[in-house]
Length: 184
Image (cartoon, rainbow, N blue to C red; front, side, top):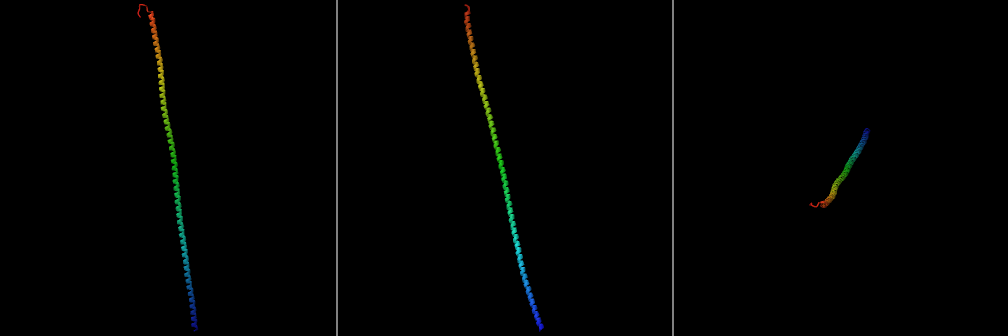
């Protein structure tokens, strides 16, 4: 009976040891499951945080690239506007230069035309003055010729008169000198 009791006590100790071992094992398993769950949650949270971080990095990168693209487009637009403004300014300068050249050419053309008209006017004036002088010279010549013709006519008249006088004188002298039996 002592052996049985010892066996029972041993069994009960053994059972208690087993139970306590089983409880420890079960507690360890539960702790391990809980730790695994905590680790799993922690890892999941870590992976979620990492994923969120990478997502934020991707979003930031996408935003950065979008801003970079926007800035590049703005720079390109500004550069194109500057180029167009420069081309427009150059075109306006060229147009101003061309307008000035045309104005100078028009002015020179006007000056040349005025000079040609003036020369034509002077040529016509010289021709008119030459014709006027020729008419005056011709008039003077005619007047001089008339005066000379009048002087010549007057001299001729005087000569004729002298001749008539001489003839009359000679006739009177002849009548006086003619002998009495002769006729006149």
